[in-house]
Image 1 (cartoon, rainbow, N blue to C red):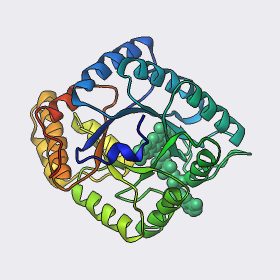
Image 2 (spheres, protein in one colour; image 1 turned 30 degrees about the vertical axis):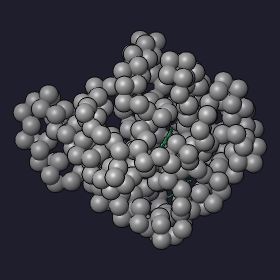
Image 3 (cartoon, protein in one colour; image 1 turned 90 degrees about the horizontal axis):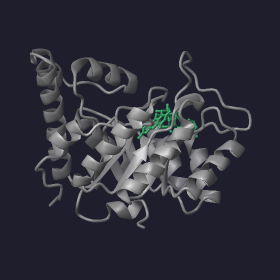
Amino acid sequence: LMTLASVYQSTDCAISFELFPPKTSEGVELLCKNVERLMQFGPKYFTCTYGAGGSSQGTTLEVLQKVKQITKLPVASHLTCVGSTVKELEAYLTEAGRIGVDYIVALRGDPPKGTTQFEVTEGGLKYANELVELIRGRFGDLGIAVAGYPETHQEAVDFQTDLTNLKRKVDAGADIVITQLFYDNDDFYRFRDACEKVGIEVPIVPGILPVTNFKQAKRIASMCKAAIPQSLESAMTEADDDQDQFRVGVEHARQQTIDLVNNGVPGIHYYVLNKSEAAAELLDGLSLTSC
Ligand code: FAD
């Protein structure tokens, strides 16, 4: 199997898809069908998110085990520091390795619902760079991705401080950076240039979410602090119905993809929300080789 950074060494733009643990068995079945459909786009790996506060932590690994069976591809488990001691994080990492997880998306995690400040669990970790250190130290076989924020993390003092903190994660041993979703590629290019200036040399992989309706777009934008450009907002407002909004959202993500590939990104990580329709539509017929 390829190491995580080497996935991005070819001139092809390496695609990955992000899933979340479904709440029901029907949801799992649907997810499996959609994963099969997404295979036609030649993804290099799949990831599955890790729920806050014990909600879906068990099922993340179950989902990944299934996805690996279906696809025979490498899989990545997201993992956060929320609510876990170091011992518990180690137990999770051991189990992840045992079931064949290849990579970890190492995160601090968000403050639990209803709170605005991240509280360190007793015996736990405070920042994602500490989790990266833990993995590098004792679980050397696992590839590591960390999160980057083109529009700055909510709690960060400012853009530059946030970058310094991103560099800590890379210096601690992260293989790649995957970004928070964004709708304006200029935000990504600014971020990429700034990463280079502070000496971050690992692949910076843009995260793209094809929005499929305006309500969802606004909710996600406020949750993730991603600004909706005026052009997307007016196109969404002018759309007549759900189908039209779907078309607008997918077309926006398609244009973002084309532009990113033309600007030499090593790969793109798609937040597909366990679906396949939007991704299929936006990737249909695209050549993802950068020149
Ligand atoms: P950190 O890198 O620890 O940063 C948190 C804040 O602290 C930032 O403001 C940073 O500037 C600052 N900081 C960092 N290190 C230091 C330091 N050493 N000293 C001082 N300040 C510091 N959430 C989930 O719950 N589950 C998921 O599966 C999940 N997947 C995600 C995947 C991606 C690709 C992304 C972009 C986000 C994901 N998130 C997920 C959300 C993420 O957990 C939140 O954005 C969280 O608030 C920050 O996590 P982080 O790993 O970026 O934290």
